Image: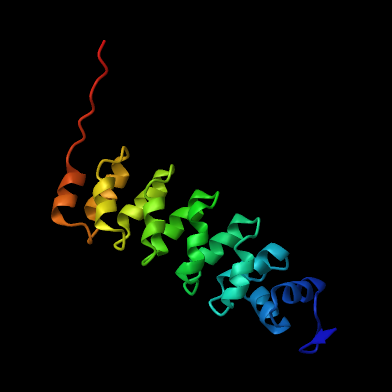
Length: 174
């Protein structure tokens, strides 16, 4: 099989067929990232703002965290797809998801309780986080989370004040 006068690598042909993309699209994505591996090509496709949502949806279940992260970082990925990453195993993916969400308040509520403090910082800094969630986050055990809430432009003054207040740690009785 030839395309544009050159032989098409089997990887490009297989990925194009599996993802329902044109050979030219996959080849261009691969060239742009100068990657000849399947991972590199998939990453380039996931980051490409012209990749159809149907393809991004297929890639959202990929085992490679870097491919899933590329989907989250793609500015054209719709929030309806981003919500899939709220419970992703990778904290970096959950953190980046928290920075991108604007209308999915239930997803932000879930991420505000994440075990990883960097995810909670991203929620605290997100100007679209509901005020009641920001208020709850003012009592977070991590200072960095409280600081994110305190510096969030969307936080009302009373929330900023509460987030900046020194924490009183009670000492256990002897």
